[in-house]
Image (cartoon, rainbow, N blue to C red; front, side, top):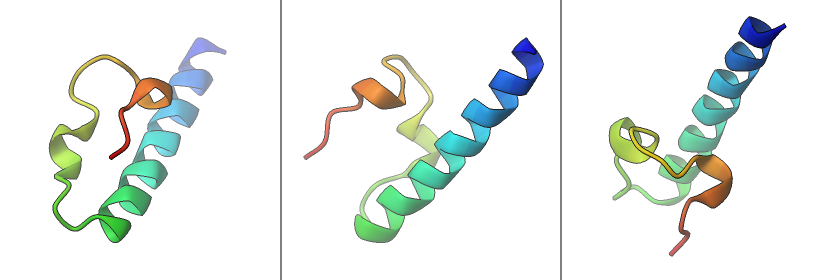
Length: 45
């Protein structure tokens, strides 16, 4: 269902943000997914 997809997407964003923060302490996870583009379009430094 659509709700199931949203939940899976949320869990994926959580895991990815935790992974990025653990590797990049300067990254603020609270702002990482606040805006478009979505996770598959995030610029990586």
